[in-house]
Amino acid sequence: MARESIPEPDQPGYPPVLIPEVAVRRRVRELGRGIARAHDARKQDDAQLVLLGVLNGAFMFTADLVRAIDRPAIVDFIRARSYGAARASSGTVTLELPPELDLAGKHVLVVEDVLDTGRTLGAIRDRLAASGAAVIEAVTLLRKPKATVGAEYIGFEIDDRFVVGYGLDEAGRWRHLPYVGYLDDDVR
Ligand code: XMP
Ligand code: MG
Image 1 (spheres, helix red, strand yellow):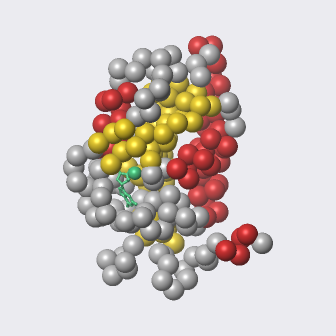
Image 2 (cartoon, protein in one colour):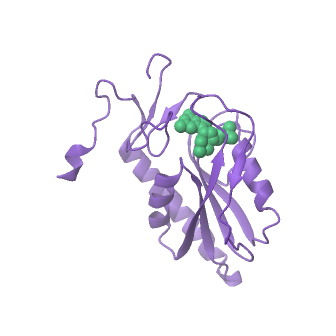
């Protein structure tokens, strides 16, 4: 079975588990249901739902979330860079938006993996402010304590530690893990 190729949490050499796979799945389903309900409640304005995933970290969350929302939705991606291979924010955010993206009148949901300082989401909100979108909201799977920019939907509030897995990486590693793990300073 394919499942056998998925690493077991707490294997030697793998990041320890912060949020187990089952908890991630359950929370993503809850978030999806809540977002669907809120979108349905706005049906009168008939706005098309657009999920804007933030690459690369939110690719897995976006894929699971759109299925959990279970409504017709456009899915597109923004590329945001504020981290290189290092674990500390560089402080500047560069954004690449799809050139054909037309958000006028749409219900836009920015899908983030983690809010650390919140600078990335802040830059995205600033950039989308003039897009003509009817609604701009954000969902983040994880939120660290020092985030100053909010998201309408939050999966988990976590401590200020470096997390990997479920799309999140350190220098390209660990994105494939089905759970959220963390890196201690002595783990590379
Ligand atoms: P800011 O500070 O702008 O950071 O909210 C958001 C972006 O930084 C990355 N980030 C992380 N990536 N583990 C990661 O793999 C982490 O613990 C982490 N904290 C922040 C991420 O790309 C996020 O979009
Ligand atoms: Mg990211």
